[in-house]
Amino acid sequence: MKQLSTSFIFLLSIVFFLNVSAQNQFTKSFYFGMKANKNKGISIHKPIVYTNTLGYGFDFESAENVIFKKNYISSKSSIYFSVKLPEGHYKIEVVLGGEKPSKTTVKAESRRLMLKEITLGKNHTAQRSFTVNVRSPKINGTTHIKIKDRDKNQLNWDDKLTLEFLGNPTVQHIKIIPTSTVKTLFLAGDSTVTDQDLEPWASWGQFITNYFSNEVVIANYAESGATLSSFKATNRLEKILSLLKPNDYVFIEFGHNDEKIKGEGNGAWGLYTNSLKEYITKFREKGGIPVLVTPTQRRAFNDDGTLKPTHGDFPDAMRHVATNLQVPLIDLTKMTTYLYETWGDEPSRKAFVQYPANTFPGQTEKLEDNTHFNGFGANEIAKCVVQGIKDLNLDIAQYLNPNVPNYNPKNPDIFSSWKLPMSTRFENTKPDGN
Image 1: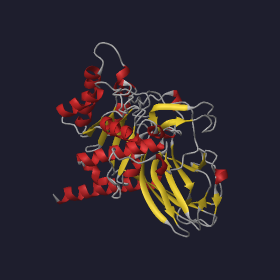
Image 2 (image 1 turned 90 degrees about the horizontal axis):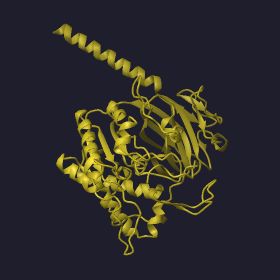
Image 3 (image 1 turned 135 degrees about the vertical axis):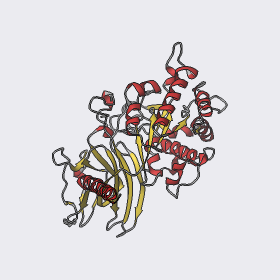
């Protein structure tokens, strides 16, 4: 017995050593400024441009915007800083602040909001931390997610972690630490959920990241144009299943594109319902916790100011599956109906990608989209989802940031209250799906 205990302790020691070694291998610290600390990590005292060979540096031509001070950097535009890293979860610690007042927003990868407008006074500093999922299309030696050609250059699918510092940022230190102990919230859905890579498009999946502590990581595998069937066919379902751990969550929102599939056996009560049941069964077999999310409404008003139910039977079909299989359900269809009707026809435009020509670089025609959100709208939808988590009293609610207020879609925010700076990367082509 004593020998067994000794052997067991020895085995645990080896496992611990290997875990620590792996963490140390990929833990990276970067200190910024002309007099940056050279003894604790990598000193960045000049505008180093990212290269794959070096494995770190300023990205997307932002190096020329960086102003180097004694022990921090600042800029009047976005600073992109990239680090070559393998797939995994990473706890990011940042130290912000400098000699002048600053307001720093931090986004990760494809514009996931991690820190919103951290305001600091002169000579004040603050340390903040958040957790980022760095992902790869690879599933195993022979299988990978099938990425659309237009999506292959997205920051979500390269071999590096990219952080964007916006506003009038001041950055002293970035520390990147691998972690495998956080709870994962997977997202499966379409263009209203996915991480939209470029402005002005946005989705709730890339804003909900701002509402959780660093003990939760959001792994968003949603895809523009996706249906339940195509999500499976492109191996995104298989990817989630390959990574899913017991008690991880999977939020499932589909409907916008599923409703366009015609033919016998399809429709809300056929293929859609059967696919939802398949997803739920497979996630539960792996010990995961599925949560159904009915589709966001389209901005389509009747003359009397009410919203048209453009999703037909699909929300009811999802509600029916949730009841029959006892799956928690966030009724985003109902919440966004309240939301848009409270705003009204004209004011609700401010939540969607609706801009006159020449608002953004290279945009020669007006943008008028009634399905896809801008940053303001996406954040309001994220607040709806967060409130749904609270209302259901899901276990993951304990990891929400303590200062997140309750949200009532019948009393939404107004656009004039939205001050978050936009990223500097744009596109004028709308996402797939409608």
